Each structure stands twice: as structure tokens, then as C-alpha cells.
Length: 354
Image (tube, rainbow, N blue to C red; front, top):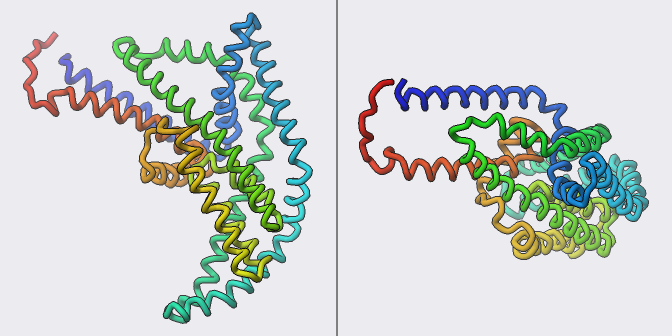
């Protein structure tokens, strides 16, 4: 068999494996969230468990200590802010029907006047409130879906513990499965992927915490009802680029339109998110995340849309890390292409059939 035929068979085989994997993930997308979250948590905590293991702890004990420490930190933060968040969240849920009706009335009153001043048709004036309410309804339904997903998160610590305990063995086993002629190259690319993902995940976690503090403090200082819970949620889901700021902005503006009669206060609420985005884009992300993902903003947006279309919320959650992995592989393939005869135009010597 010639080398070209062998290469073609390899490409067909790995293409079929990839297609089968994507198909299985699409079929299981509705139940993947706790497992994906557990995998992310285990990946995030693996360096800590390795450090404990270096101190002489058995891997199982190192895993238990790491998970316990992470749980204690989470509980401590949760206890500190949960009473305020709980109070505002419960009140917000109770007030949603009233807020919805008041917002609808406000949009129906204000939108036609704004459209008339802009010289737009009356038909557009009738559809704008409906469009705005439809957008808010979608956001609300997404929030309820997220709440339902959170009810499954008790599975995540269990998944994370087992994955963290066996992480090194899983890596070693996968390494044994690598095709031997390409094992060294694959290890090099996986090391590059690990470097980018580690920087992104840990850096983005710091950015999310700081944004949650900024949005929650800013909206509360302005006196916006439920500002703390909206700000914290906006900061936390900023792990998904653009989604956190957009969601927080829309929810805050809806609440501000209902609560404030003075347009200056409504503008001040918008200003909090404008300043937050400026701080994130010019300071937080460059400092803590930097160029570790290596993706253009347009490709990030495309990845979010593609992930959401294929796998729903789970797809949106992992869109950027997966896109970063694909980016590393594409850059590798591009480098190989630039070194190949398809780019250089050189003609390979004839190889005898075996």
C-alpha cells in the first residue's frame, strides 16, 4: 500500500470517529451539564491535587482534601452573600408578574412615541413592544432552564471527585491509545491545548468574580431593586463571553424602566454596564486571560452561536474552550500545509509499492 493510500485511510477512519463522537454528544446534550461541569471542576483542581500528592498524600486523600477545601471556600462565600441574594431572588420571583405587566405598559406607552419621533411607521410601533417582550420572555425561559439544570448539580461533585482521583490514570491511558507514529506530535499539541485552556479557565474565573462584585455593588449603590442578584448573576455567567454582560444589561434596564421615572437614573444603570465592559475589555481580560485563547472576537461569537445551536446551554458553556482547541489544531494543520508539497509545489519522488 502506498503512503498516500495509507494517509487517506487514516483520514477516513479519524473522520468517522469524530463524526460518531459528535453524534453521541448531540444525542446526550440534554443530560451532559453535570458531567461537563464535573470535568471542568476536576481540570481546574488537578494542579492542587497534584501538589497535595507531592506532599506525600495518596491520590484519593489528595482528591478528598482538594474537594473539601474547594467546598469550604464555596460554602464560606455562599454563607456571606447568600442571605442577601436569597432575599432579593425570592422577592424578584414573586414580583415578576408585576414587573412584566408594568414593563409591558411602559413599552406600549413609550415605544410608539419614540418611533413616531424617529419617523418610523405605525406598524413598526405596534411590533416593537411585542418584540421586546418576546426577547424578555426568552431570557426568562433561559433562566428557568438554567434553574432546572442547577437542580442536577448535586451530581457534579461526585463526577468531579472520581475524575480528579483518576485524572493522571485517565491521561496515561489515553496516551497509550495514541497512534504510535504520531504520538509525539499529538502530545505536543495537547500540551499547547492544555496551556491555553488552563490560562483561559483560571483567568476567566477571576474576571467573573471581579465583575460580579463590580456589577452587584454598582447596581446596589444606584438603588436598583434586586440589583445585587442581577449583578452577581451577570458577573458569574460572564464566563460565557458577551452573554453575561448582555443578559445583565437587559435585565437591569427592564428593572430600571419599571422602577425609575427619571431617565438619568436609567442612564446611570446602563452606565454601570458600559464601565464594566470597558474595565473588562481594557484591563481585566488582558491581565488575567490575555491572548491565551488566541481567537478573534468574531470567531468567539460564531463559536457561541454554533455551540448553542448544536448542544443548547451546554454548547454555549463550552463553546470558547472547544473553539480554542480547534484553533490550536487548525494552526497546526496550517503549519503542516505550509511545509507540504501542496503549498511548495514540489513533486514527491516515486515510492515503490510494498
